Length: 599
Image (cartoon, rainbow, N blue to C red; front, side, top):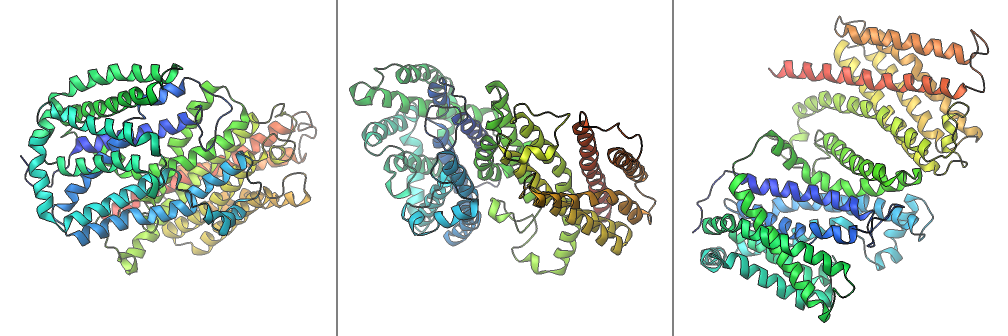
């Protein structure tokens, strides 16, 4: 029995999709500590991860393929094959190309550095990857293999749509074919056969043209989701046998772990182990589909809406963020109970930050897997009205970058200090964290370089914001120039680590001391934001006081070689923090003005 076409969403499938991708991120964090080969590893190895990955490994991706197949079925209900093809290409091709060229190459470069296969810079690595020798070995997809497979499987659906009678015939037989206990047994038998017959020969390659075991289970799951999603009887039986499936999974999981841990677990050609893996795989999927259908089918809301929109971007970003985080944090030699939660937090936080930034920029949305903004046609960017609106929103985006720049700078400095055993905060300058005496100067130099670039963008945001609020265009330009010069000085200084004489280019960053006065001058034409003005006055007074103290203009000897480091830290905190606070206040003010304008 098929359900009638409906525009209502299946929120249970949305929750499962979000949950499976969330587990994938934690799973990849775990692989950094596992015994299996992965792109980069922590110095810590958690031997129990060999069995621990079995909690989600057998079923997580199969569930995602099933849910993806169900989602495309709803897409096909009121669209032609060509319309579906265009939607799939627009959604999947830009992030796949961008990911392969940028996101994956960053991962592969760090992996090559880490494993000793390369010692050059990123640009040199790009030349290697896309040169004759690199292309001869193939272009790595890393975690984006899933996107490629979804694209290819979607093409199969588009081909099927040209034969609607075939789709109707299969759907009409789905209910009777999987009725009752058969919903537990038939898919499990298929997965057992695939696991026993194909896995020993092909393994899991993630190479599209030689991944027959993976296709046999993943394409089958994709097609099952496509044909079964509208069959009421199937979902009724999934809910009916949810507890049975959960019980089977509860028995299969420890048995799998025992087979992996025991030296004889691979006996009889690995057939018993493969059978248990397949049984666990389908039992967990039935349990999840059944419980979700019963309890989450109508549980939508703003949280799910947000997560459902963000999940593809998070998937694209997370592994690159994680590989970079391991590479930068590992030299700190933190205890595993600190390092692992820190890696998870950085991976989630940075991925969410990327989503929050790119979702506000129409030109970046497609390459990060996001649909066009509501009510905005594909070519809306050609209209003057669009650019008028974008210019105002762009100010807030640039100011948001200004809020995050101090956070990144403090994080880079903090991790760099942890990674420098014996660093003396009282006597040593922060710039020494980036020279050759540091255990891993890349932590400090890379973090400060990016923070400097972000400061330049933030300065443009400050200038545009002042121009928008008070029409003080000249002052706005001056503010932007001061920030851009300061950001350039900060970034360039990391290319010439201390004590290189060229490191003195960092003095350009000191020009930011006059920025609070320029902001006050620019905001003088409005009576709004009195607290911001007071904050800017206090900031300038404090920075001036610290400057005259450190240059011995008053109280000579107060700053001396035994404590100069702490004075520098205090100056840096004020110099950097005020930018984030001012950017936050200005951004909120612009947001309120935008809301008032639209009312």
